[in-house]
Image 1 (cartoon, helix red, strand yellow):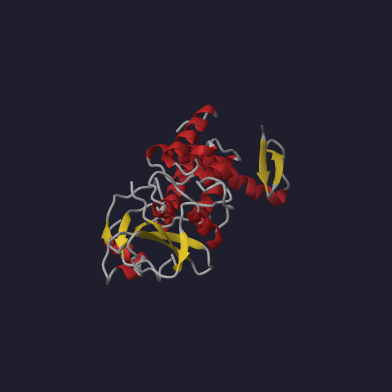
Image 2 (image 1 turned 120 degrees about the vertical axis):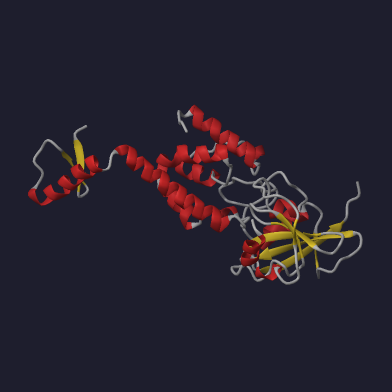
Length: 138
Length: 147
């Protein structure tokens, strides 16, 4: 793939982009070399943990699953999409918490058996098994 | 959670006193605890992640919570006074009238609550009011079951 996105449009980077977009393309190229992919992942991890700790701190006394899931930090984590699945699964394995709503929202799947609804340990196990079956590593 | 932080969330706890009775646990919530369970979360979430009796509509309404406890033999009653031979459950609603919490009365007359993902505490009837949980909207009772 030789495509780059400039102002919402895809261009082949080997082509000469319109003059008005050249500075944007240059910014992207500089960004790519200045911030390596590995560091971009670090940013993702930092963002996830920052949001997760805010969510845990501000919802730990709640019983309402809906209120926990509607917390702005939790919603932002859902908005980060599939990239956070390994981080959530890692969290679920190390220190189970209510990540089930987020996993279901991000993946559109639900591997938890109806009889295990509410049993946090079994719910976590079901999602960890799902993660392994779908090739996620954490 | 340290007591100062709990008292910040639940300001009414401080003056009459309360005590923490369990370690922190993520494995059950206040509704389960009020229903005498300690191994799963009860909540009528539309996403169907948590346990809710199949016979009761999954909606965050006082009616749904009263019906859920009704399946366990609880019926509405008029006050929180200790009545020998009965156990009582108080259902709290937030400022929007949505159920937020439930507590169960102990034979001593004190109340026991599981605080979300945190600990179980013993507290007075008023101990958790004027907080995020709102106020008690309904009290239910059933005869104490003897094993």
